[in-house]
Length: 148
Image 1 (cartoon, rainbow, N blue to C red):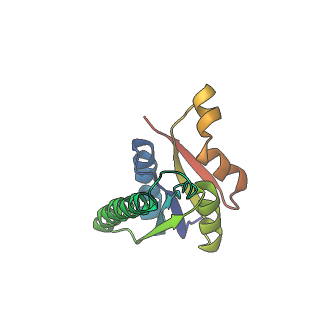
Image 2 (cartoon, rainbow, N blue to C red):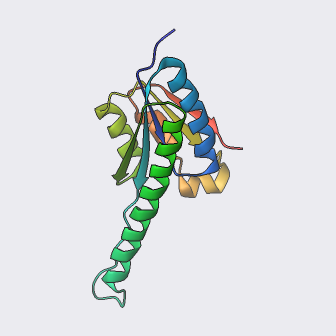
Image 3 (cartoon, helix red, strand yellow):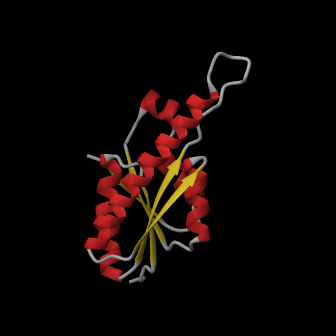
């Protein structure tokens, strides 16, 4: 059996992510591995200055999103620490799958445990699949966990 030293869990704080987190924590406990929790902030699109949009509004939206993500990530980190697992939270910004794959490589993750919403049909076509893109580009094994 391969011993895992570093497990990455990307989260969007959804129920699908929470289910995957439970499994990642179990693996981390079993192997006494470090758990890397990753949340990726997706930048807001700023409208061109010739529109009626107020740039301050978009700046405030980003600040609010960052504060909420920091708070949610900190709460998860504290919960996992209470379970006696070594954990680090990473808040990144950019395209979700790119940032996850890059962080996994840079942090030398042995495995990624990611939740999937199980979308099919038109919603998958329109929204895409972060998990699918991570699987396609990651340099380490990826375990997908389907949400309830």
